[in-house]
Image (cartoon, rainbow over all chains, first blue to last red; front, side):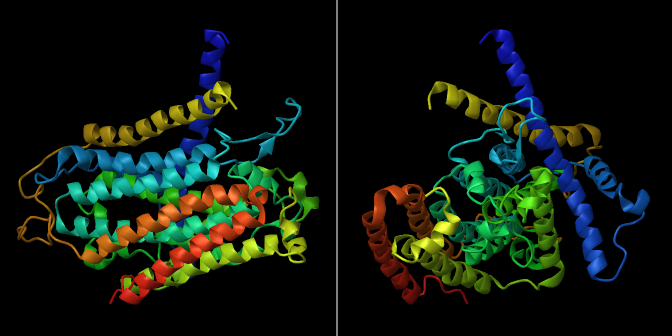
Amino acid sequence: MTGLEMAATAGIWTLEILAIAVTVALSVAYITYAERRVIGWIQVRKGCNRVGPAGLLQPLADGLKLVLKETIIPTTANKFLFIAAPIMSLTPALVAFAVVPFGETSLFGIWDGPHVMAIANLNVGLLYIMAISSLSIYGILMAGWSSNSKYPFIGAIRSTCQMISYEISMGFGLVTVMMLAGSLNLADIVHAQAGGIQHWYMIPLFPMLLVYFISGCAETARTPFDLVETEELVSGYYTEYSGMWFATFSLAEYGAMILISLMTSILFLGGWYAPIPALDFIPGTFWLLGKTAFLIFVFIWFRATFPRYRYDQMMRLGWKVFLPWALAWIAVVGIFIYTPGLDSIINFWMPWR
Amino acid sequence: MGAAYLANEYIPIIIFIVIALVMGVAPLALTYLLAEQKPDAEKLSAYECGFEAFEDARMQFDVRFYLLAILFVVFDLESAFLFPWAIVLNKIGFFGFVEMMLFLVILLVGYIYAWKKGALQWE
């Protein structure tokens, strides 16, 4: 490969990456808008409708306002960690999108076979997602510790504790997906669910779908698990941050929410496949993004509907309900695979076997 | 699965990390340059509902958080064992399945012990 070809390849990669990273940032802006409108609608009020037609320019106005706010770095804070924390929490939230397959395309017949639309179609994709998304805990810990203020400190400890507790049940839930798909590659996992809604993993793994999605709510600190930003803690680990610095943490949180919705669609809801094979003429990306949009709506719906958990209730749910439930489901799937008679049932979802 | 695979799949990730870092730093730098900065001593003090800070914030915290972190290490390692096992489950057969179930039972004993001791209990 010549230098020119390498430069061209790197340029194409950069464009692809920008197409995803910038879209994620923009969708975060419009999810905040959707959230306000949907919650307004659920609570029988208007929501934001003043800036632009139907309030559509509201996110831009918010962004502009945030950029024009003063940067406050407390004198008692640890400066280096305080500045690094927002970057440390945003970067993993974006980088995790590198392995997400957004569909398959043969580029209108230019390529001979369908190619997976992912920045990097890693053979360890699921492991990569798990690893990168747990890195964002460091940003939270750094923010809470470096602020040298009580509310962020307590907020960071609670936040970390909540995230690590739910990460375990999340990991165990994913093990069952791997047992059925026999692969960590996200495209392989979607391929294993081809052929209509009855092949999707949400049917044999329905309890794990609940565990994964609810744990995702807890991981991203969404209602009903938003204890890290309860009134008693002012605003949790980012109390000391102002303006755009504060918004960077929100950006990371909403980015994580999009990622959880995407992953739930890919792992349990058949990814880019239509519920009925006859509907597969609609491009897969639309299906995947449609499922994701629905799950994001569910996140918002949760927020408008559920009261907040108490800390002990949340810990009980994570450690005493989800963990044994997920472990039991691993055993159940394994027993189904290895018991003569029962294996013919589970083989329906393991077409590669 | 060689150097070409690694280059094709991992170099884009490295580029992505660089772009994500830029996307993290740029708005922070932009707001610092655009917004008017008028710091004063009160504004830059740590927030404590309008009071002077009583004491340093690096205080003691409940030991249960620490206990939970230890339990997390145990169970997270456990899932790190389960990941490769789940992938090759079809190849290692019934024997491999029983082996992992035995391992899970041993872990379960520890889990029940932690439960009975009240390590998972918050009031």
